[in-house]
Image (cartoon, rainbow, N blue to C red; front, side, top):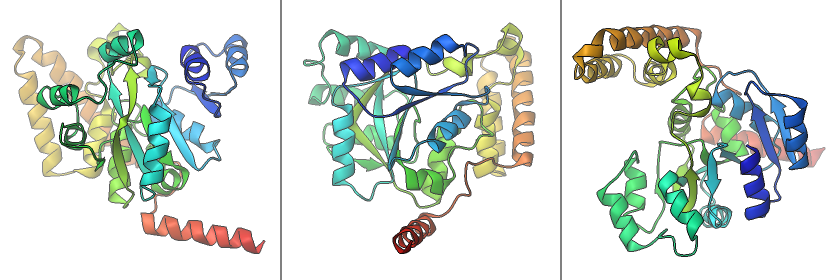
Amino acid sequence: MLALLAYLREELGWECRVVVVDQSDDRGARLSAHLAEAGATHLVDDARGAGAARNKGASTCATEWILFLDDDVRPSREYWRSLSDFVRRNPWADAVQGRTEQREAWRKYSADPQSWLRNTREERLYRTSFPEEWTAAERLSSAPWGNYAALTIGTGSGNLLVSRRAFFGAGGFDERIEGLGDDREFGLRMWWLGYRTSFCPDAIAFHLRESEGGLRGRGNWKRRWFGPDPSPGALYLYLKWMPGHAWREMIAWRVLKLARRPWSLPVNAFRLMRSARAARELHRRGAKHLSDPLPRAAAIQDAILQYSTNLGA
C-alpha cells in the first residue's frame, strides 16, 4: 500500500484524497504514521472481505465520484486523464470500468512507457486473438475496429470508477461475499437496477500480483487444502441471481471438471460440498448491503428531492 501511495503521489502527481481500509494483521502506529505522512486516511477494519472494506472506505467519501484501486494495482500515466475525458464525453455513465493488464505488461511499461504498445493495432489484434479472462464487451472494445466504449455487466473493483449517487443507490457491495465474486455481484446488481456501467479501454491499470493474492490467500495449510473451494461467495452469487436450474447446472459442471483429475476427486468434491453448504447459509441469511438498493430512476428522483430541499433550506 505504501508503494502504491508513493507511486500515485510522486510518479503520477495525484493530489486527491486517498482512503486506505486496512484489514491486515499489522495495524500498528508505525503504519498509520507512514500513511498519514503520505496524505492518506487510514481506516482499520476486521477481515470481513474486500467488499466490506470498499463499503467502509466509500462511506467516508463525500466526492461526486469514487475510484476503487487495489493495493497491487498501478495506473498508467494517462489513466486519470482517460477516465476524466470519458466521463465528460459520456455524462450518462454511472460507473466506468478501466482496462486491467497483468504483470508482464507492467514490466514492459516500466521499462519504456512512451513506446509501450498500448493502443496500437498490433496489440489490439493480439488481445482479440489470444484473449485471457475478458468479457465479451471488453474483447469487442479492444478489437482493432472497436474504438468506442461498450457497456459491460462484469466489473473488476480493483480498477473501477463509480459515481457516489450510483454506488449508494445500488446499495454498495454485498458484504456476505468475503472472497471472489463481490465485484461481479455488484456489477450484475447495477445492471439489474438500471445503472449504466461502461468499459473504457484507454484507462489502463496494471495488476502486479495473482488474482487470488492478498486477503483471498488467507488461512493456514488446512484451509488452503481442505477449505471450501470455490469461494462460497462465488456460489452464493448463483443462488442469489440464478437459482434453480442454473444453480444445479453450475454444480454439475464443476463436478465434471473435477472428474478430469480422478486422483483428487474425493478431496475436491468434499471442498465443493462445503462451499455449497456455506453458500446456502449465506443465501438464507440474506444480502448485507451498505444501503437499500434503489432502481436508477428512483435514485435520481431522491437526489433531485434532496437538492431541492437543500435549496429551500
